[in-house]
Image 1 (cartoon, helix red, strand yellow):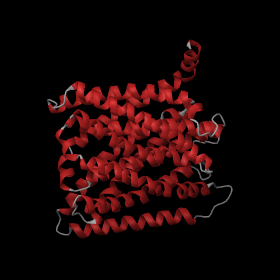
Image 2 (cartoon, one colour):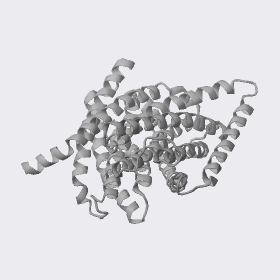
Image 3 (cartoon, rainbow, N blue to C red):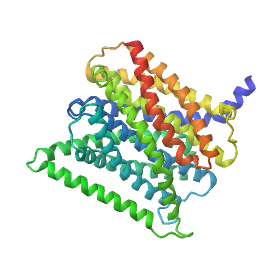
Image 4 (cartoon, rainbow, N blue to C red):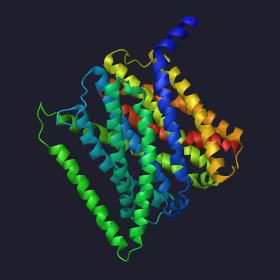
Length: 414
């Protein structure tokens, strides 16, 4: 037993150390996203569906750029990665496809959020309003996250890091940090334009222009001539394989947003829960991203066979549980401390708030471990690249299941 424990520590100590470092950084960063969300009460109450849009946008950033990080990690592990944006490189193919996917999914999120808000929450905003907020905020956030993704790839290639252990939590955290302010900024700009005498017409014109530019960008990507030398066909492949998956994932992201939107009044009433919410959901994404990235690389390298029994991944599961329990404990402590510091008090006790996140965190980790494994295996069995499909699917499903778990646990304690 001691020998097995010693082997586990020797083999996974570096991954746990790097993973925990990234997760703690991510959890700390998400604290600011939670604090900003706590200050967006007016916008949340003014526009029906804003909570849905916010969490769909955050989730989609992680889906698009988490998968990009996973592909880069695999390319590094198998020796095909080159730190260059020249045509013909892995990085350039991921860059082109990420821009196109960001634009398409931002427009899709705006339209879908408008429809859901209209049907379920009595939303009165025009479809162009939500398309404008979603696309402007999403695209600005996407550019920043793309830059950080490239920076992580650069640092990883220079220092010889296994970016599978750090890209998912860091990208998820960066997505949270920048998406919330960019959605806030685009909403502020929207209201400022709406105050003008021709505000509605201006929003409609700009939204239509965004849709047209998105269509042009996608058309250029898909019709661009390819050859064996320029590798641009890889960008097309990523786009074509990722788009259907991301559209399915959008359904889960919207579902998660509906669960959260339905509990909006309770979350606003208990500030510590509002502050904790982005960090909790992000950790679920980050942990599932870490696990699926490791599993995808292991499958590509041949060190993990695509079997339905998860026994071969038991050590990876244990590593994820260790990282999860430590980071959820950390998030619970800093969220409560931030609530006391910025709001003066909390109407939930420290013990109750800590119990909520630890119980919810344990349940979420159990779900994401099994989900991540079986999604990666299923993708491989169907002849698909798990790097393209695992992170978007697991992240989106975990957004929905994680929000349901958290809401359910909150109901037990409050």
